[in-house]
Length: 316
Image 1 (cartoon, helix red, strand yellow):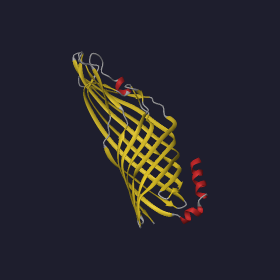
Image 2 (cartoon, helix red, strand yellow):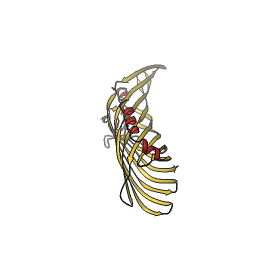
Image 3 (cartoon, helix red, strand yellow):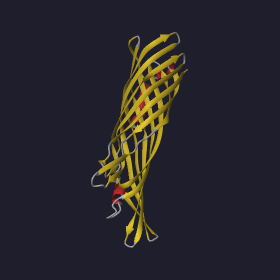
Image 4 (cartoon, one colour):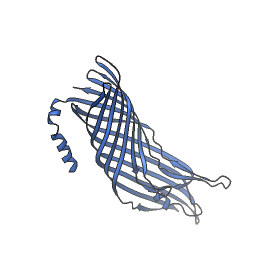
């Protein structure tokens, strides 16, 4: 409710500005790389002469995304836009494995086996964010434009981890097979204020053509909610008889502030009513991954999204 009131108040303060404003629409192609270090399994070398523990960490490939929006340009500027980015990854391991997540750790094979032999994991990040900005342009010198920005940011970031581990070992007069599948979800949503500053430096200008260098910096503080779940399914097969059980790791939901930083640098080309921008963008979401494991304890890993952005815009 408080954010709806803020939007209505700001809207009422700009009636004459909106009436004179120039409209614009834009679409932006993203090619980002996600980084969030999460150890999912420990691979142990049992050779007494060369013992070590190898922590296997999830890595994500470069993946395309999309941002679309529009706005009004006048004495005061405002714009609204939506950012969409999905990325998936997978990994596998073999050797003397210990599950890093708590469900797998509690289901480790008994002595003398102690370790799993093979393991796999699939992970995903679903990033959906809405931004509403309002700002005013200032020109301290002819070639430099500075635009302080304030506004709102809100949306959700859903993360999932599905790991599987397998072992086969000898039991009393039989062979035992153990298979576990652990599903973890780290789902976040939040809304809150943002501030920033956008700078544009004219590099070259002639008639209808203009080339600008841009450097934009933003910070947001969202009132955040994390919904975390961790469920492990265990299947044990002995003498052809399968027994199934489920372990639930009780992780309470969390409500606290989420801080995010965003930076963009690039080059903009303006030609009449059209413009194109090529740049590099970095988004840093502090303490985004809130799951708990037995490798490094509670996580508060930053989620970094960075990479190339290519924008096309049309003014009318």
